Length: 357
Image (tube, rainbow, N blue to C red; front, side, top):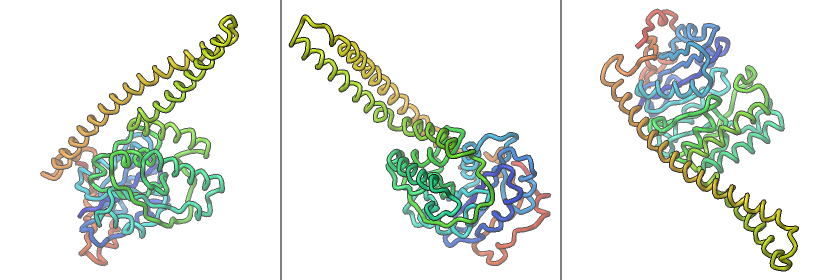
């Protein structure tokens, strides 16, 4: 059983060493552990520090591409590197490495495909009251959209099984957290929560500038993700409301027309009602087209999943095959039988052994 811990980074030189030191070197039920750094266009030497610390693999972007792109690049790299379980954590040391064994336990026991660390946001001191309320509200919305019981949907501390990783695709550039939960729930993957504690805050979020900015960017992500899987349900209720409204106005016009055919004061009801019915019919047609597009998208995702599986199998057949874009430093994996030796992979000369496959 191979576990890879992926850490997306953007100028994280000040906090990466502590985050790396906090990671577990052995976990019951896991044979080996490796660390993958996704350098999202850092300019402060994050990748160089990662090599010195002894991280096992690095994926480096020439320019900043966003958190969602970094997460997906890490997932693809972990699959090609043969990961059975992938843990995603933040480089700012927000999440405690000691919680990782508890995070992966449901996957090791076969109960879950995706495990999300519940930060218990009501207890986080540096969260403002409004942010706590929005966290609860947002997670409630995601539960409805994803048909899961996720408790902390924005949490980036999560464990993903190989099966789930093969199925996950992120289509927005903002964040992976919300879209992947909706995808997992709508694809029938088992999602579980694990309550965790977090470390003290080290810096402000780089994902968004303010709460209104987060809502402005996260809202469309949730809307599009749900629309990809439930287009008829999303558009159908709007069409139904317009249809009922239009028919009601039509009945109103007909009622007063029958009472007094010579009076034309209710013609506006007929006009507005007819317009509402026409729009409702158009929305029904749009919903049917969207459903066909969604079905085609599911077929495309199935093809991409099979391509991922082929790439993964290819990468395991020989050195360098299917591993383009992944820099391997030569650091030995942390194995469960290494004992205390696995707890000190701090060798600066490992950086000189780096090679790009």
